[in-house]
Image (cartoon, rainbow, N blue to C red; front, side, top):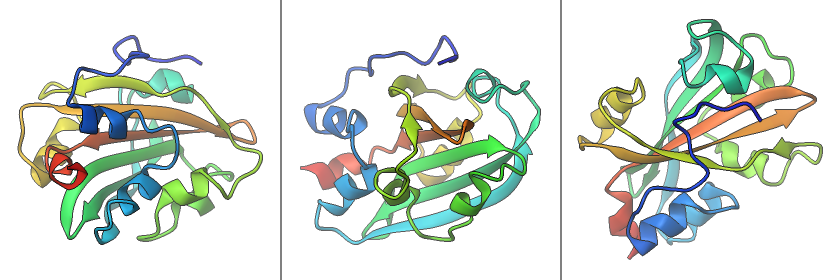
Length: 175
């Protein structure tokens, strides 16, 4: 898979609980629901956007090219614990209907509803103030940096890139 060199195959050093959640191989939605807290998806924005420089290699687009983005906050008991951005090519027939889901979780579909789905390995990095996804995460939970993971999914050869930034509040629910 083409990927940006700052996204690494190993996660940053974190507490055992946070590390376990960051490296979860299955559905993050199911993992969050297993806390016994009230899980919800809050759509922050959805629609046309520009391809970020570190998204471009995974999508086969140029940085700044138009794409379709869905940004959400995953919450537990109304507290944001994850900021997620899912991006695909603009007007992608394979992913557009799937992303147009309102406040329903994308994770449950990605890990159970699409038998012909291919998934690349997870990649990791710390997102700091110099990354464009820092600002929307900081609006939910101001912090110096955010451990993040992302994965590319292929459906009928069409790529979807899902990036999740783990907010510090998540740790309170993992104890």
